[in-house]
Image (tube, rainbow over all chains, first blue to last red; front, side, top):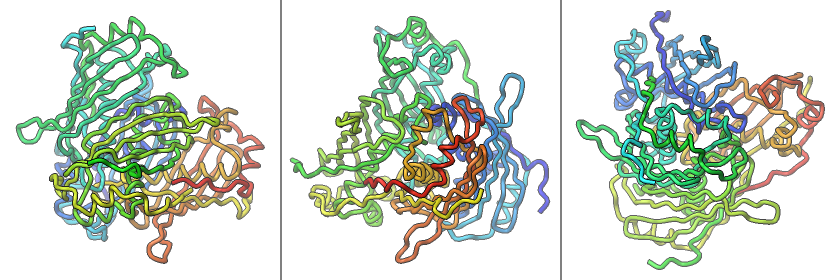
Length: 149
Length: 149
Length: 149
Length: 149
């Protein structure tokens, strides 16, 4: 399936103190959390919450993750997570991510990532992504960001 | 020291999927992260970043934590963290926290907490809280929230 | 209820790299994980797994936590967690913890803690702790440690 | 560099309650912690601690991670992490991982992973892996596992 350019969401998250490690940088495991928060925001901006899916017995389980770290990220950095849906099959969806941090006037690429998700039912068995979910996943954003702080 | 009523900051944070556990609720260990994020926001709203303190060799180490859980918190809940500075000694500062979640029209108290922090230098030795830090800690907010999402 | 002295379990856990923070020490939130791991070991050494309880609709939800940090803990330290059941009511159980790290020939106290747990059913409603659970909780250890590494 | 078959370490770790999520399984982000713990054990079994390297200004920073999840892992599962050094360049080292869980008499493959690490100095600048480190990384195990529990 050829996916439209609007299958894109931008999400900003602040790196937490608890996510640092003794090297003085954000620990690499924290990045999976940033990708996940961005992916959940991708759904929210299309009017759909993870919970409403879960109630219909539709879950998107993470089956593969890949992250490439380009530059260190530090405590209190605001990370812009660009989430793009790049592939959508009968059961699986693939998202790609670009993470940037503003340093002075420059948005520096700090990491790239990709996750493959599989639609599963409540007992973790693969199932087809339902048509309404396909519709929502491939829409443009219909809902604004809910800003917190 | 009698602390003014303006020693208060409100911070909103969204409960993450990764913070849930198999009981279907937010795991209790995640709450320490919410308190910490609120405390760091308390400083930011007074024009002071943790990093600027750290560069001066001033760190606030957590020496005691207490949390009372009143009601379960669920994935995607927006938690309002009310952070109040309640005691300020020569070396130690005590913050108290009220965490609420909006359910329908009601802000339900989900947890209360308290943390005791001690001022330490770069090698974890206790030191007096410097006068500028005391000034900043007891100010009203001077900086608006930076909203993210 | 007066609890016997044998209501005690010792558990050893190694502090992980991912649990450090930029101060170069183990972040305070990691300690709740050590207490939990020790508490689960307390049950395992009495022939009872969390899962077998969960299947009977018996959960021990954490309702209150308290931790006092005495000395910093570092990456790769082996922490001895002493878990003691100190109170057992109709619905609630209270555990206390002493965490020590061997430095040279001395076991240094690094932290103390306490947690209050409430027995709840599958929808988080309080219920009486069942008699078999009371029996098991107040037994001496009947099962050896399963050593991993 | 052709790496000998003995560049292999087996490490066992128990999945923690705090690592579960509301799907009732171990959250995917926890796996990066299992890989890291296995990698650190790989070094320990060759007589070398992360801390001794760090004191010499030698750090192995994670620059790329990949994980493929094959089957769900549950709370309290004992995960066997097989860590293999598969590539060693002037600056970078690549480890591969196989994670299995014993179900009945069968060791089921639950996940595979790979991490690329780069040798950096104390300010995160790339540097050559020192000859002693190359020697240690390519040795067979010289130290037994330290079992904990």
